[in-house]
Amino acid sequence: MRRLVFPQINFMKISSTFLGLLIAAPAALAQGTFQYDQQSLNHTIPPNFPQYIQGNEPIGQSFTPSVSSVGFVQLALYDGHPNNGQGATVYVNIRSNSIAGPVLSSTDPVFLPDTPLGGGVTNFLFSTPVPVVPGTAYFFDVVVQSGDLWRLDTVPDLYPGGTMFLQGAAQPVQDIWFREGIIVPEPSMVALLITAGALFCVRRRQ
Image (cartoon, rainbow, N blue to C red; front, side, top):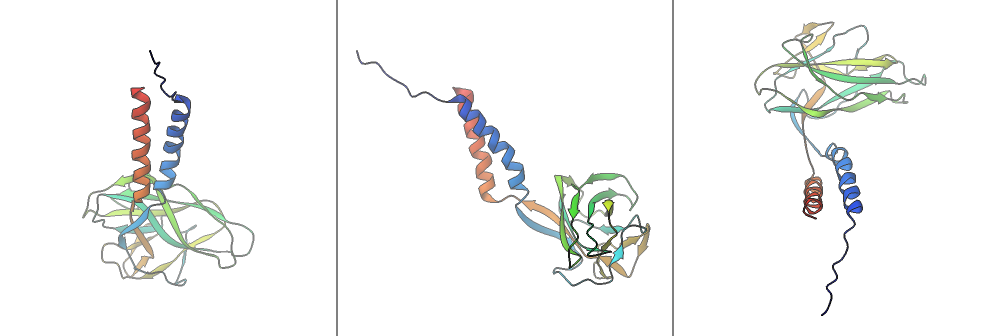
């Protein structure tokens, strides 16, 4: 009688591959496509009346989302003392009710290095999308966690869904240059998660 020989499955290899895919997936998803919801301008601009962050806290902007979550905030920031070899670490809070209201979530801190140009457009990402109610006003404020003086770029009052806040006071004729919205995962990243799930099912069955 012929003996049937089944190929051996390396469960450790499957498990480690699955674990590696799970670890890689969140970082890959964070690199998806930005889908803008609210923005004071739909294009970048050169520095335009930037305001210092330190000394003007809370400094930020109100906005009225039309989608149910916020995944990122994009701002134009500039070094207040360029070419001195220092940078700054900055993060953004999303708040409800007012510029000093309850913090719903905070972005991961971003280190801004000292550069000859003094800064530019920076992406601030939430580790988990922040749930919001479409049509309701929310607020974001910008915080320098540590480092050099840093400034936020501003524009005239072009955004109808909110206004800038400086030292906690509304600035009706001014907005911060900002964009906010959601991050749409790339199709390849969705496939990666499906593959990870399939490998997990194989491991379970075996």
